[in-house]
Image (cartoon, rainbow over all chains, first blue to last red; front, side, top):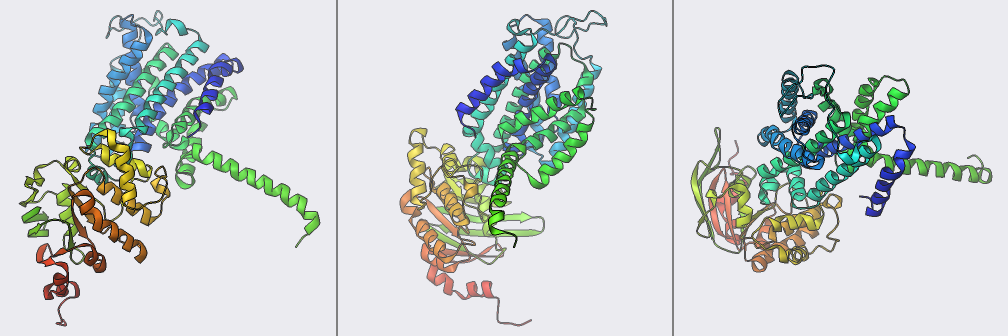
Length: 336
Length: 238
């Protein structure tokens, strides 16, 4: 874990300096990075901390976005309250998705969550994903006069909304971090290693598994609210079932055991496609890249990029150091 | 006092415990028997992982079997596992504190109680060290510290010295012997190392194919013909 001072400096850099370096295109992409980093933190918690593989988190995100959009259309509640509400409602629904986790694990849990994600996608598509209709369930049949989903009044511009999203992301990371460091974190670590050991240690495994799903769903619901504000218009086509699998892949690549891994996952998932698009490369190549990446992570770096990258850099440093040493000593020692 | 009567466990056609009846009075008691005799199954019944089809277990006058598995730690059951299960991701301190915070003890004494338990098992390492970085013997000691923290009433030790070199086993034995006076808990020790069992336990019970075949003072039990036959087989050659 990095020093708090380093985190603070990094955060100030992201909030104050980064927006002036980036064009609006990349600022938008960075907002998405912040949003998806929250989602990745939730999934990383489930996978890395508790050992529960959920392949339905993109659907949970869709629920969060859907709920937030409906509340934003139907009420004039302040934006932070809407985020809180979408977090809480998504928490209830996401915990229901987690119910099978009490009886299933491993491949079967992954399969069930994936199928639930598919079901949610279908439901959201057939029930007319929110546009600008009135009230909580209204539907606007017009295709031209759809009002955009509103943003908080203090953050209507792209840069302001980016900063807003980063701050919300920091709060959500703080929430997850606090859980990991406290009693639930210890319980989760025990459950992940051995359910028998956890039970023998007096841990109510049912409660703590549901707690993990609740927390992951809450932060994902908040991220969904941010997403609704970020894109202004939501379309069901933007939430595909396979997104959950891609999300799982990038979380593994970033590193499911660390919160920094979630940031890396967000960058992989949202910033790379923006870069590729800008460079004129089809983002479809990313599917292949992620596939290779997951393979690499599973075979050589099980703790993900955040763990492996510093080690690789240190190795590279040593290699370069040896190269220089070898060169300076070569004339004196000569060839063997 | 632990009174076990007619305890029977059935897995399909197999009966790992067959009307097992035994009374463990106090102090450290041994439970031995050949592989597959039902020792670990017995511990799993006491932990609540396995539901017996018949029989009862009365612990200090309470019906232990009626308590939900995860609540038994709060009641005072502690155990170690045959394959040691200290939590790798957590520090030594957190490993022990986790048990304490799930016991009846108040949080105000937690820090001291945890450090006392770590000192009791004789670990001279940084409590902040991650268990994943420790060696086998130290992990076993962490597990033992988990078993003694937070006023346990019944400590179950399932081959706590398995795979340890003699020197570490001796140290382990010294710690185990002191558990009853330190914590007031009744301890049941399962092990194949007869010198460890002899050193720690005044009384010992012997299981074979799910049945109690002998119990009494350890030295007598170990000389018992039935026990020797259970371990070594009969003289008849097939």
